[in-house]
Image: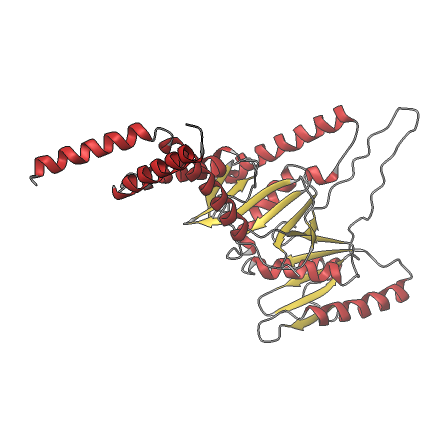
Length: 175
Length: 188
C-alpha cells in the first residue's frame, strides 16, 4: 500500500483533480486580490503614517545637490491646492489658507501647532538632559510651482514659533 | 443537453471542487496579499527618491541672556549681530542688487552705494554675484579694518519662483563668503 505505486496513484489523483478544477472558469479570483490590494494600500498609506511623511503630500521639490537631510526635524510639505495654500505635516496635520491671503491670522493654527511641537521638544530635552538642534529644525518641502509670496506666511509662522533654523528640502540625484 | 442539466452539472462540479480543495481560497488570498504588498513596496520605491538634501536658512533671533545663578555661570554668546554693515542681496525679476543694509535702509535713492548685476536671459548670475561680492567685501574690510561679516540678508521679491530662491540661497552658502543666509523678503 505504501509502495511507489501508491505514491504515483496519489500524484495522478492530484493531477486529475487539478485538471478538472482548471476546466472551470474562476471568475471570482480578481475580487479577493483587489480587496487585498486596497487593504494594503490603505494600511501603508494612511494608518502607518510614520513610514514616510512625504506620502500623500503632493509636493514636487526641486532636484538639487545639497548636503544630506538629517533624520528628525519638523517636516512641512507646502503646496497649492486649488486656490488654497496647503501645509501638510509629518504627522498628517493639514493647514490651509487662501493663496492671496495677506492676513496673518489665517496662519494662527499653524503657529499654535509649531509652538506645541517646539514645547514638546523642549520638555524632551529637559528630561533627557541632552539637546538636539536637528529636532527643532524645520524642513520645508516646497512645491516647485509656488512663489516666494506663498511661502512668506510659513516663514512668519516659524518665526512666531521661535524656530530659528529651517531649511528647504531638495531631491538629490543619484550619482 | 438541456440548460437545467448543464446547470446541475456545473453545480455538482463546483461542489466537488470546493469540497476537495478547502485550502484553495485562503492560500490564494494570502498569496495575493503577499504579492500586492511586494508590488506596492516596489511602486513606492520607484516613485520616491531615496535621497533628500537640505539647504539651510536662518531666522534672526533677539538675544535675551538669562542670568545663570548656578556654579558655572554660563552665558550664551551671539554668533553675529545684524547691523547697518551687514551685506544685503536683493533679488528682483530683472537683477541682483547688493550692498550693505544701511545702503538700502537709510540711503535708498543713492546709486553709488549699491551694486547691480542683471540676469542673463532671465537667469540669475550667481557666479558673478559671488565674485563681485567677494571683491566688495575685501575692499570694505581693508577700508574699515573690520572683520568680514559671515551673515548675509537675502531679500527675494514676491513674484520670484521658489526654485530660484532655493538655488540662490544654496549659491550664497556655497560661495564660501557666508556661513548663514537670512531670508527676509517681506518680513523685514
